[in-house]
Length: 339
Image: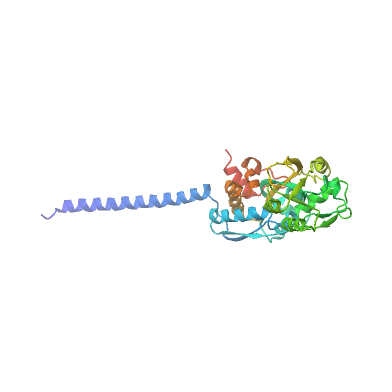
């Protein structure tokens, strides 16, 4: 039966209405999708430039080196498109020069090194987070007669490389013990790995190291060669008062007795500690720094399972980065996770 003209007209009207309805629904879906994408962009991971960015660590077999390796692995998954290039260095002062010169965008440096640094571009340095504390460790053979820092007079002593935080605090500690670092000892500017090898070979009588606890190079040394740690606590207050450098960088601390199970003494060792900061420059992309800050905090447990010092990275203390102000990207991250 052929539909009447009236029925055909009604069907056409209903089809047109459905077509208009679908067009409205489709438009609404597109608008909501766009709004959803904007919302995710605003509240989720920020945009950042893709590509390679340099991260200055420290000497091989040191804590900075291992921390950098593990952070690199985390960033590869957490920040797609960002390749973190690790650059070994002499240590803190070298790292600050690398960042201010633009050779690297990120680095780890001790707070006393930041306060001491006076190179070009110092005013452009910014902080991302306070990480963990370095502990100064004076290592000697187990049968050494050295009982305190003053006993090092005339001996062959590893004092860290010239641009390292180790060298900076070692010179200050020696001066606090009334020893001229250049005249009263026979200094060797060595990284922790080389210093450990030379102590075991009998080419050094002692060496200083400033690093997180435990340091793998010292753990390895203690497993093949009998060593002990000389207390430094008697110098902590002197260094804090005289060499603070405008910051409360140094504090009295204790190396727990189980840090190096095969080394002596068996009781805790008094020493000096200094905070580590993750640093960058003021012109490094805000989104990149925000993402890096998130990566540092989110990777704490994973990195801390292998670098025990990193277990101390914490949101409550990460923002205390004296003597450096926070980078705007880091500030945005901390604001976004503030309870």
